[in-house]
Length: 318
Image (cartoon, rainbow, N blue to C red):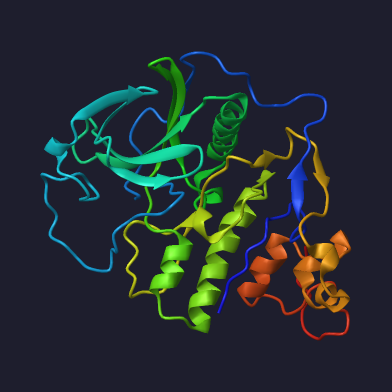
């Protein structure tokens, strides 16, 4: 069984791409910019992860106080000590937990002056060696800053950012982003689990929650299983109840940038009946369900979509 995840749409399931007209809302780069965020460690809530690497949390271990909070590393083995955006972190340079075409993510330990407030975080390092990478880094900072302005209960299915800072190392510009640490991504989770209908339904519900929250302010534009992570302490023997949307490199805040809808890929070469049977692939944008309607459908609050005029049951409203 395969799971197909399409790029998300602001109106629902249509495909969208940003079009910057009359300038960009993204700030221009400068040296040693500090982007202020949280002044103290986050609440006790266990990463952003491009190629997810995490240990299964289904087995229980005795807590070792000589290790960091997530028990990944011995505290004394983390020799590198750096400060980013006023946050003091310890880490090992080789402790990579995720990587992509433009960034590397390290596990880091946030030592708090308050007893019991220590935290493990994900330190995302984006090397800004050209204008494109600089734009990607600044866009992610901008989007996450907007996310963090939302009340906590309106972003609890989106990864949190605790701070960020631009630094110059050996003549190269880097953007460091301190993020909430999470566990494995949905692709790894799906591959590790016994496949059944309940598993797929829980995965879809989980992803829909994060998308609905983010669609209140923007469009993600890179929806795939790898861009959702589950909590660090998720018991793999228990049903999935929560996951978080990550990686906002190409996302758009709709109040800041105009958005054009255009078709791309192989949609024009699909059989006509495919577009009429798949509600998310309707040619008419007004006939496609919103993420709210999909979320309501998955939670059995309604039974049909606007394109299904001949079906019975309560309509899933956009």
